[in-house]
Image (cartoon, rainbow, N blue to C red; front, side, top):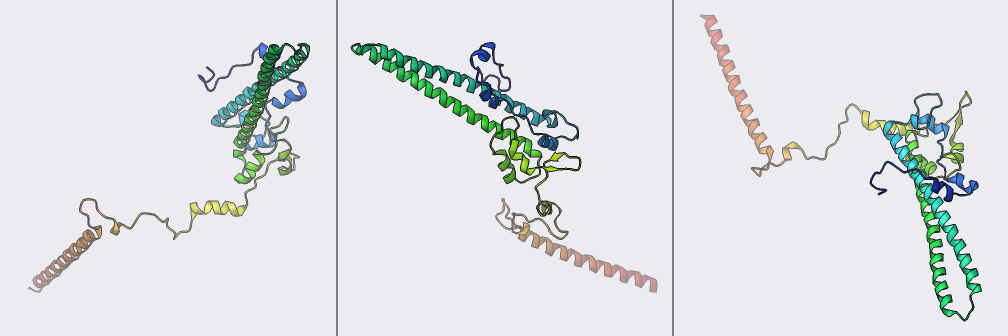
Length: 270
């Protein structure tokens, strides 16, 4: 049912908000991160402060919205799994207290209680692992969002990946990892400069321009050595035949020209 529509997502209900909650000092790490202003300025064509999503192209905006929805879904998965793990651990402690109150002579009750404790402990460990896996999925989505926004940054893939794989901050998408790369303009505005060197730019543009005398090399063989599919011979034989025919026709044309000129001269002498 959840896979019937890939783009739409159901909002958390009042039950979810009531029972699947966390302490504020932990819940703040699950919120969607805001994009840093210098990164938004790279994608925006206006110098005014705009919303982060408005600076993107329509296709990029849809990707950004989808990644943010995935982040929110993983956040609620973490909240639900954390609540389940907490109550499983609490139930395990209650079962241990209950075991102490049962007489040792009641062997059957101790055996049944041990099975319930083992199942409860497994549930507590499984829900805790669900929290870890959801947190890893959330980290991957943060990395994908970073790479999406860094498409507008003029830098090589090594620097982009280094910035995209930096530790996740509390509120901002890049956070403290972005500070060493920023420079301040005359208007006291911090921007993210280009890291591409001029030499790299020239080498990138050289295949387009090239020299005047250079010609692109091809991997196909020369035409004279290409075989025909219906005769089995080389096309060079045909070209030799055309050359002999051309030379013979030029020779006949030249002899007719000399004869006509001689006839005109003879008529003029008469």
